[in-house]
Length: 413
Figure (cartoon, one colour):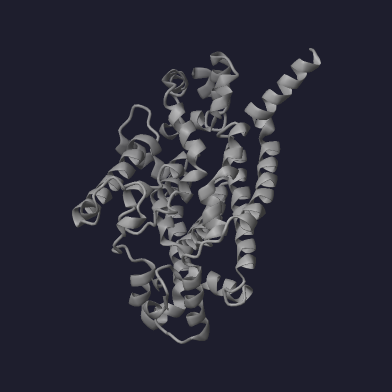
């Protein structure tokens, strides 16, 4: 093999196979560690909510109010859960009552890079996309704006949520539940991931353990809000978890083509809520729940009794931003949760376009339990299909089911 062929082979491995993931992750993180300070230096800071956050933190710090619904700022009342208030109170102390914007931006730059590192760890663990896709994560104008130019709480919430997702990948269910509840404690929007979490916990842990995890989540919320619940629990819930807030038309992005009077109407909000519930039910019935020629009711009954090893693709399709803009999301930043998920969403869609592989794989699993169908196909990185023959790819799929099939099952298949 000539030197040019060796270089081509090396580049192919680095760009298209899992061998290049560590190098790609390190390179993307290093690139953004240089890019983010440059953005802070040369792009003007935008004041939107930071001053209001600091005013609310000051009221809490001084103890001038005892009820949650009395905490106010220039932009209105405090509408986030208690952990948000605790975090920004700490930032109030660190940034000289919010006056040191540059130091605040440096702190949020660290949060951004930590978020990016966790996201890269997720992609490295799942091997869902080839390495050449990963640099796109560092090129998001929206993400840099949210974290270091506007200092929103979305970045903090998503950093904690991605830690929760990483915990799920390593089957650290208690860690994932604690992190998820903490993320909800920063911003209520994280609850949009809850349906997928319920499905994953039921499939991986069973009903009893899932209930225990849910109790742990609820307990954390109670502990975080305890000072305010003792004073006036209803006032806290009405602000921190207000599901009835009217969304302003001027902030929408996805529904700009709709007339303002229609957008603000109650009927439109109800229609979007029904659509969101329908989409969740459709994903749960046809995508999240494993099926192999049996009724979905049998699948539900079986998965409640027997934990499985389903992958986490359902988490990346449960975020219903488009259908919930009208209720409480703020669409100038609601896409934050989707950006890092786009490559995996693309791969999941592609995997459904190769039914021949699915059929061939399913035919080998007739003797398997119901919940093992299709699980392994989704775990195989899609770019492997570009470099292996179908026979080799089929053998790889069968080999990945070794944890779920006995030798007898393999011989029969």
